[in-house]
Length: 365
Ligand SMILES: Cc1ncc(COP(=O)(O)O)c(C=O)c1O
Image (cartoon, rainbow, N blue to C red; front, side, top):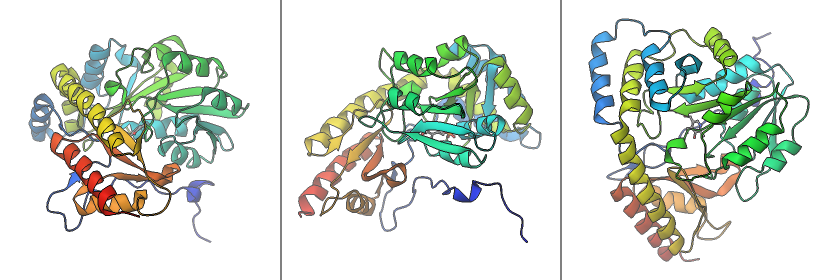
């Protein structure tokens, strides 16, 4: 006899992060994990460095200063914010708190991988709704709802497709759910979206007791290495999460740097302007090479390659990696013929387009 994990856990394929090395390349551009090329702003860096003197003491467990900073930045009630060790922790914690074995968890075909992992880890059943044009299809999601549906995860915008649902579609989705089903809106890329019909989820959380929105400091704020995320919740959900989360789940430097980052509007605006410019530049220039690129509202694009022959995604990946350009293969998202490219520095973006042009030219079928 050996100790056995809960049913479902051994069905999990462990999450594999974006590669960071390219053996042989003289300079590496990591464009595989949707990190910001600008890094954190000066205020966040300074707060992180100042926190070095406090490493011997435990963090303030309620992350009060950070929650107040988030609340002030977004006009929210700080009591309804819960901070986590990355939004991954909060997405997982919600599953840990609300799922019973056999419950169903619904998400879309190319949804973020953590949803499946969190579901299986709680002996619950992942249910996948097909997408339409690589975008969440509300009708398909609603058609997959059953009395056992306990959580619906919606990445808006979605990773790795870069597509999004307008607020009216999110409302329609919510209207089709039972009040006992939790709708979790994962808005990790919200700050990048420039669409009038987009809303990150705050309005819905304010209105309904069964909607949670999660956000992250890993993307536009440039703090992926520190691991900080937050959830805006109905009061009852915040109470539940606060009972179960680690009492010191956000470290001293993470709390300090994140509080400084969210107050630094100038840095966020600089990062938005960089993304606006280079997201459309990359989309247009890669399309001009004859490759399909979907419209994205995030800080990344999905590039489609040939199914077979000289121009497959795997061959492009190897070609780019040899030049130190690391993109993300997304076969584990059901997209074996695509690579995801994060918007990088001007230098990296130009190198990727030039490398793709060479790849298509040199690797003739
Ligand atoms: C859709 C989505 N949600 C959540 C996360 C997790 O972010 P964090 O670093 O806050 O755990 C990511 C990171 O890639 C993501 O793409």
